[in-house]
Image 1 (cartoon, helix red, strand yellow):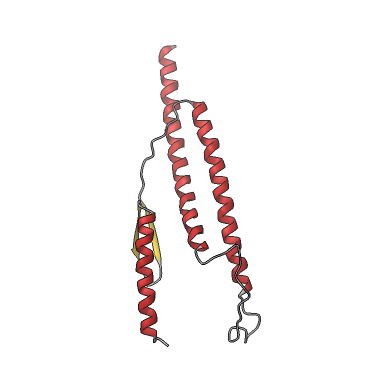
Image 2: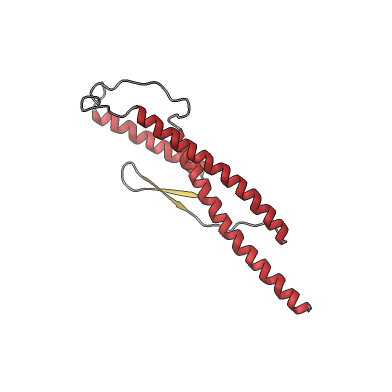
Length: 154
């Protein structure tokens, strides 16, 4: 049976490995350690180039964005709900339950990586909201330029 120092050392190694994997997955994300077991994500802002030039193209892009965001939100809700169900199955039933806790069985809707999937999907949803804000600003600029051009032509 390994001692506490060995267990803590293994946890540190796993944390470092996890940080390196996350840094590869999220290229534009910087991770910095704040405490032994916490990660803070800092998003770097970047401007996105948009392909729409007309109002119709913007509305089409917006409809596609809404459909993708709706599906992403549904997936996040399902993962969070599966996690809550999984935790509920392992809750202590009474005072002595924590001493004699038995496994109920794996939940087919939840795995150990599900919380990381939910976190990465939440990160993607946040990026999508930032992209939408940038798109709205760009659409406003294009509209102002179009109105200015129309007023000069008239």
